[in-house]
Length: 259
Image 1 (cartoon, one colour):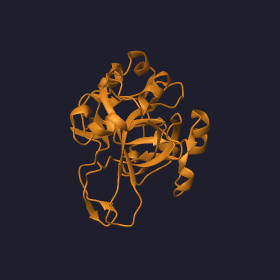
Image 2 (cartoon, helix red, strand yellow):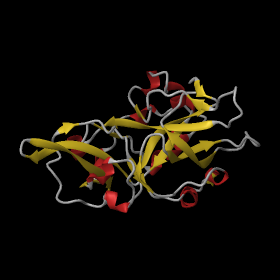
Image 3 (spheres, one colour):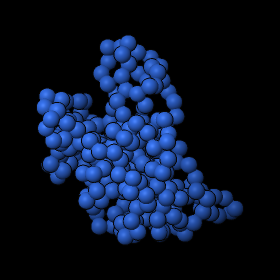
Image 4 (cartoon, one colour):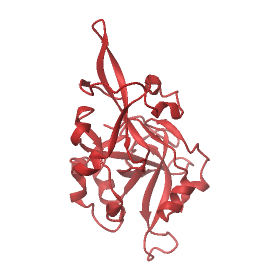
């Protein structure tokens, strides 16, 4: 699964790179770097939508900030303007999203991309004296490029409260490929640039052929890097969290939950 990741891109730069409209400028200013993104944190997403003023125009890419952890539109309010607490829907299985009530509508009409520098997973490895430790690993493209993960998003409103809409997103996961299988049996669904327009198209159904496994050559370009156990606490942040921390372990062990 993908339950923690790192991102350092500025939304204004992202908008230039993707020829997109930066819609984060109208909201609260958030840090552009977060090396320990956790569920419920605000995250950057890329969507493609028509203009409200000119709905007949072609859709345009837009950079939006959303809550990580999808809140379905039918969620009840727990307090005025605040959704009730529920399962942290920060991941959705690509192979079953079309049949799950929380995700099926979003898969049809609200698909997004989630840019990141890389993601974390933990393995349980021997620590000597018959003990074991949870060892963090960071997965990132070896060539330094920025991966984009397939995601779904939603709009939630409390119509009984004077509050704006809450945008939220989830990251799709798929079966791991190649050496990544030794880290976890699931991985984020990475989409390469030639698939972005089809994935984001708000006027077309989800391209089901993109919901399978990541191409072997794409997965082969991912570096698996052992990193500091400082990432274990969501209170810690900084570039040292993604720096190599000693020799890589065997990358074989019991897979564990990130949360």
